[in-house]
Amino acid sequence: MARSARALVLALQYFTRIPIPAALARWAGFDAALQRASLAHFPAAGVLVASVASFCYWLADAFLPPSAFRPLVAAVLSTGATVLFTGALHEDGLADTADGLGGSADRARALDIMKDSRLGSFGVLALVLALLAKVSLLALIGAAAGWAGAAAALLGGHVGSRGLTLGIVASLPNVGRAAGSKSLPLAATIGRLELAIAAAWCAVAFAVALRLAPLAPIAAGLAGAVLAVLWIRRLLARRLQGFTGDGLGAAQQLCETGFYLGFALALGRG
Image 1: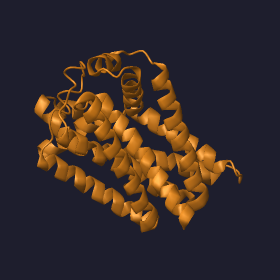
Image 2: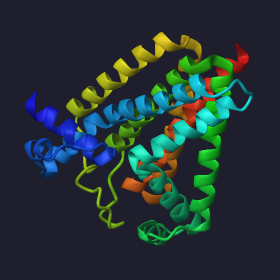
Image 3: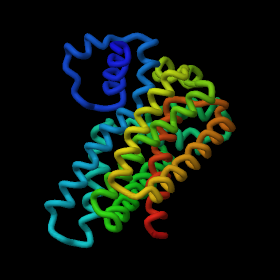
């Protein structure tokens, strides 16, 4: 139990910008095995991120004057909050992956491009399109289903995307060493226990989401996220013969967007 708690603290340190007291950080410690164990709590980071985003959405929805633009402003504020709360960790991975895979068909060259800290045209386009998609879909969901619907979508999107991304870690080799990735110890491997813990976090989050929104949009959102993770996994396997930390960030972003899209489509049919 103590080791799992230490892994949770480490996960929050790595995947969020939440301030961790120095005494707590020293208690958690740091080693490669604990870093790998922290992957089990990747969805827990999603719970916190979604909670912050939902609170920001609620603030805008509750205190801004009635307007057709209120859901859009709420979506912008909540999305901005998630970027700040995570330090744009996953957005950075999406941009690097887009630059690498879009910049060269050669595997080695693509990995080299992904190491480059400079932002290329493919990365810019990916970031702009992803942010536009997320903001637009969250605004649409809020307009159709209110704050509760948006909160359910945020919870399912952030937690589900992180849980599904771990499937890539479990099923593909990490080629981060070739890419010079600093995330190699983090995602070198994941065991059944870590996957079970991650699944438990996801189950709790979706149980809460079902209290906020009907089953149909949540199930449709999950279907959209699954399709997204299957697509990005296939792309990484074909182009890189494995994954990198940047690839996992891209997977999270695509799965999150896929969840919002499925959720919104189900609302439209309802």
